[in-house]
Image 1 (cartoon, rainbow, N blue to C red):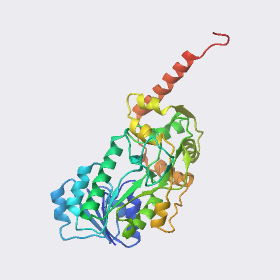
Image 2: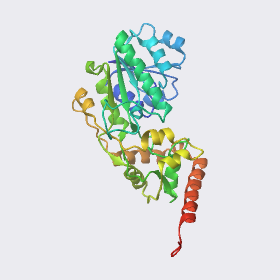
Image 3: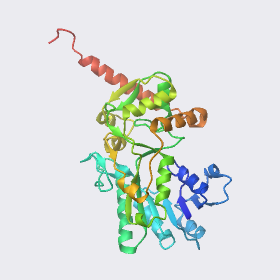
Image 4: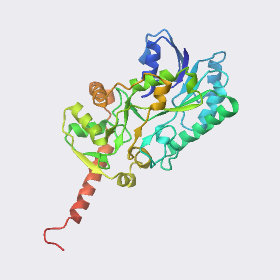
Length: 345
């Protein structure tokens, strides 16, 4: 197949690019080229080094080209999809929009999520923009026959990213550092809500199975692992991979959302604080034989090993570290002030 990926080097898309190249497909990467060295040596790779927001220049680069599939991993607002429609209508047999499972209704009426679960998220603008993007593309499909497929990933990770629920603006390594230093680690809620982690290699297998799939046209499909974990299990698996004791400190998601310094309203209240279990029956009908193979405790060991052996991935965040200490200290002082002494009325 002749496939163009807009982006193609991110947490979700790198494994897709690599597997497409390994399988011998003709891959076009449309991006600024800063990370394309990941795929050095493949003669079936064509680099189109241009900013996708420069629509005029992109149109010049793709003039005369047609594709079996085009996928956009970095469209976040409807105007970017309107641009994609102008660029690729009539030039591709399939256009894939990577949306988000965070678009599903929060709170959930049923913890089991299917593609039929309502799309509604009043807590997170990111999710509302994804919903608006889906709406626009479905309208283009119904009115103009634009051959779209919508993909909804949930929490996907690779060897470069340690997936967590609560971390700072500079990534998750500071939480790992706190674990290594024996510090308390904030876990939202009581750690018992259900979540799903999907390795990018598994995601890539399912994604590629949908490329050129006529049964996926006009459809929305979620791609996740079938493994369900509690947040306690997720953090424990990370601590085990590090070979350290986990010292959890539980903080209500609603409290974290009210704390100044970080905006957890969308990422927690509108997403991770909710128990979710994904029903991937539709995906398995469209891609017969697909099964996610990377168990989280195995995948996270690979990730930890990679991060700990690559200093550039060890991005410290002193501001977030101090914030954690302040949140914990404040709650401990509050608890001490409310604690009644024996015999006190």
